[in-house]
Image (cartoon, rainbow, N blue to C red; front, side, top):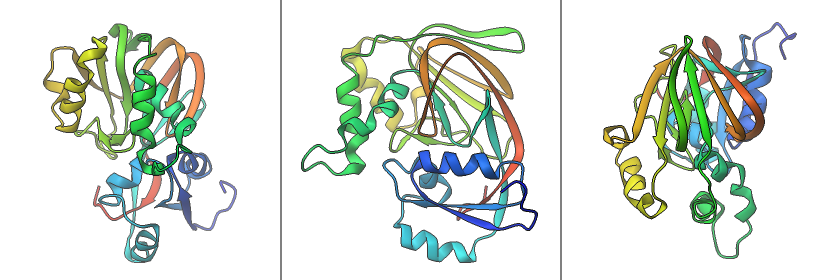
Length: 245
């Protein structure tokens, strides 16, 4: 796609993982992308298309929408546009498809099942985050998100103040908590008040480095490394969506 000079509009029909593969071909080009929600979580579409709609509705309405330039995030050699994470949130996303085929459970509820399945066995990853040669956080984490968008995990708005066009990454870190207190923190995530809790740390940066010995999840893709470098790429992708960004 990068070698094809005539701008075209590409429809990514699937979830965040498939969208991530399409992004790799379209970033830093003039080609346009439309995200058609047809996956498990559809977190990126949830925000940019004003809620999870039927795929047919997004396809039809997108014919009237215009492209907007948005930021992307480069993580090592991979690009993503919505969410990256390293804590129990990553474990949940990495194993969400392990429970898709549970009888009588809709695929859209797979993230809830993955939360229940992973929260008991999660052993709190140790993470070091640096930016501009300064340590932003060092220690065990429950949640650790490095986001460009708002939602992850099948509808949790973990970074409500994030912007796809402000040239910054939004970081949220929740320290190690007692597992029995998980419902308390989930309630704060659902009410968008997690940042008010003492154990929560939030940052806005243009670049940062994460050091840990655990795999992360980046728009549905599991990546394992010991050093992850993040940097924002302002205005590097043309997105066609309903919301004015």
